[in-house]
Image (cartoon, rainbow, N blue to C red; front, side, top):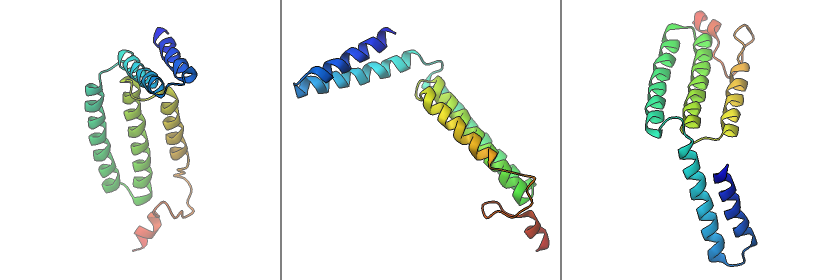
Length: 140
């Protein structure tokens, strides 16, 4: 809480001052204090977060390849959407824990992924222009 008060003090100083150099210095100090606070509150180090994110990307790429190769087009495409959405949410979780993403932005990404996944309807047999049709592959 003390860091938040310091940041607000710097911003109040910048708001009340008429000296451009003082305003610039106060805003710069507030930004630096905010970054310092984020790093001190981080649950995992940025290096570990980067390594975990790299592993998630690799596993997601392998899972997408497997879904495309071993499943019909419509099912494979649906699996790719789910896998990529979950991978992005997991990477955002690592960024949240390392102090590089706010809770608000994390929740926005979770909502986005949920909307993306909820648009999929694997039981709908009507053709959709965004999803390849399995029946068209079987006919050819």
